[in-house]
Length: 188
Image 1 (tube, rainbow, N blue to C red):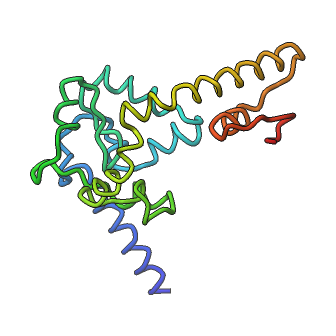
Image 2 (cartoon, rainbow, N blue to C red):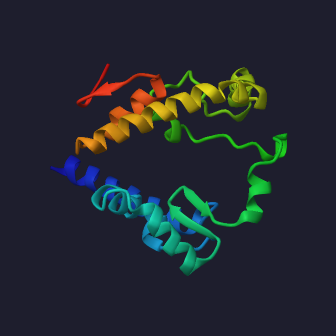
């Protein structure tokens, strides 16, 4: 029984310390925002999970109340200031590296991919391998194919509208991005 009480007290002590750290000792504790959002992820959980993805609109309300920089969770800030663009998206130097937190990428299950890379320098190297695919020349070269797929998608939407069919957009967009045609909620 003493072990259970001791473990419970340790757990509660850790929880109180964690909340205290997040509210007063964290490097981002001085930024404005709801105290509950700064203390726990439950605030974000409520809007995103319980209310079904409404946190992005709540963040807009928070900016109206707290200003251009708002603390939106224990580890995150949201910036709604166009002047910050130059700070965030400048050429990378040793002084402004933007390593991702591992918990941001671990949910992808793609640790060895470009998207799952936490280290800024390694991400930059991996991204560099695909940069040529996004050059203006390559994008212009693909433009006729993209137009063709858009026209096919629009024609399919029109046929569905004529027949009063309900369209499963997940299938439509999957077919669009793969250059396929879909019929009755299945891709062919």
